[in-house]
Length: 185
Image (cartoon, rainbow, N blue to C red; front, top):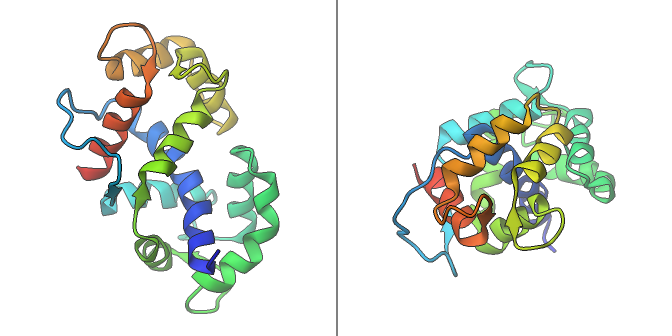
């Protein structure tokens, strides 16, 4: 796996969860514009800034290796932590030991956006019991693992905002619509 692909993969694992959290499941379209079976979606700069800010825990305008590792831990990606020094050698273009926003954007853009299989993987991250649906309870557990303060009713509202078929949960099609609409806007 190429170095930039590894960075994109690690970043995408974090980004999907954070984008879903920050969008609060409210940005989605009732009409499906793209089946998403082979698409690539580029988030806008505002979305990238939100993701960057989530990584930059101390708000100093740059991501340290410790901050990057903390996000990986929160996402349950402990095995990827050993790759962080390698990722930083690639993404840290100015050699200062940190990833600033410009470098963050460059690393992401080089990776080509979020691929459908990555969105499907993000769906699986939220679908904790593997039943093909994301419930409010599962959203609550994942968001809390990311350090978010939310309650079950907040999560129920998030699910209702995306749940087109009214079954009280988010299926993969609904999730795909929400994710692609958020990233295209």
